[in-house]
Length: 180
Ligand code: 5GP
Image (cartoon, rainbow, N blue to C red):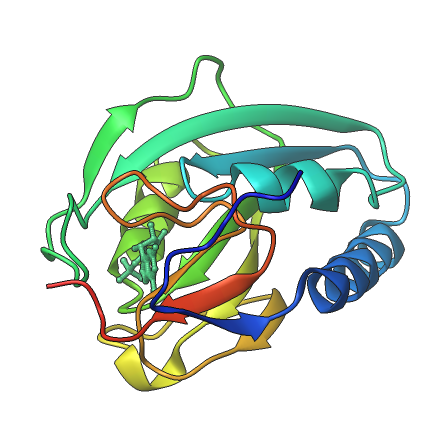
């Protein structure tokens, strides 16, 4: 049985298209790292479904780590203040890190995370982001592996929530009218 979307939910990217794109990103990452071991750093909570799918398309020796970051609270726009809600459990010194992020919006979260990781001396840091809202950028962000570019509207589904809900919807879509 599939989860039922709310009345005001408008699908934007269908599950089958997400699957195809995620598989392609996995092939690109596998090719680029050419057998070098990789540490996938999953940014909780929104990236957990994307990460679970993506890592199964990466044919490399792979470790998985998690970090919890928050900048939205229950709102639909960034507070501009990034908080670590759960820190890394192991050192990442000397490792090739692939950050796995659900969406780059203002860019503040990734900017914060990249600067934070630099203090931990990894060998390299790359970024895979499923979604990108280029028109919402407040700081420049380089996305090495990008799934889809979308307009500046608040989306839910495929791991993305509003106030904790809708993460289990298989497609990505927006709410119209949007949440207050
Ligand atoms: P940024 O710091 O780039 O503005 O935002 C990054 C984080 O904000 C994402 O990891 C995600 O948690 C949240 N976010 C940004 N845009 C959206 C959106 O359209 N929908 C949802 N559910 N979360 C978003």
